Image (tube, rainbow, N blue to C red; front, side):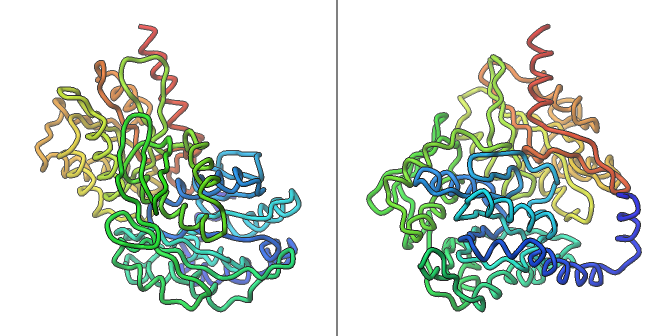
Length: 441
């Protein structure tokens, strides 16, 4: 069946396939009783930070006593029941998505936190979901075939849900009219465009300039990140300055929902780790290992900066990563190589999700960029197509107090291969297995 679907996608124009998804989404919503109409739906829209932000906001809602669902790249929650996202889609296809929303409604969830990627909007998966609050995180360079390799088209797709929300009816839930709200990262140059839609309230957050929720005095250490917003100090157990802006958006969203600072503090602090997002892997080794989802230039730069902040003098940063095929931006491959080549001490380039692209060509494209930054093959740059072998190499290179990043896939449960096929995969599991092998030697 997968091969048949893959073949159909290659034959039919993408515009025709995407137009099919619109009525499919409407049918799916009606079939499941339009479950989103009975819950407060909060969507995170943007290139980066959606998964972390969604998990943090779910935790804040939980700390407040609100039963909430969550749908995103890494995990899906129905109340306290959590499972990893096994479909390799941030936003599952409309029939599956509406079924999950129906399950949340039946379980008694009153709120749902969702990631709303531009690619999902391209296929109209947001149709049939009446959003109440949208949080705009950022837009980074993402040239994808899904957006006809155009940033302009990406923005058009990304704004579909904003346009729909501004025109949607206000819900009446438990005798209360639910207002429409846009929460936006005002550090971003595109913030005004995303805030231009007519809604009941508009709220801003930032780390670099004044806003309604301005995160200041940011400090990062191996135990997490701390910052101040409007005279209140917040602490999260997630490492990295980038998590301050993610948290600021969550504080802004939660405060707008009427949640107290005390409950926000508690909710932020309850999250110990997020699957595949700077997730520490500890099997008793003498060096530090993180599995992370960084897979594009801005994310990789932030990851390298976090590594530099944590790295002790004279120790090394070792990074394993790859590049995606399947219509993803091929130009960013060399850029990823340049970034890691400049900022990391040792690099292993390997498979990520090649899809129908030549895996070794992807790896070579990245290696060219790393070499431009001064890396030399066999000395501080290794090209290993087999991801497990690559992970083993990265761990084998590490000395006491070094930092190893296993990047790009995070908690993805599949590796996407040629012809629409896939294999089961989890970087965290493989990393633990390879660590144990090394420690047993």
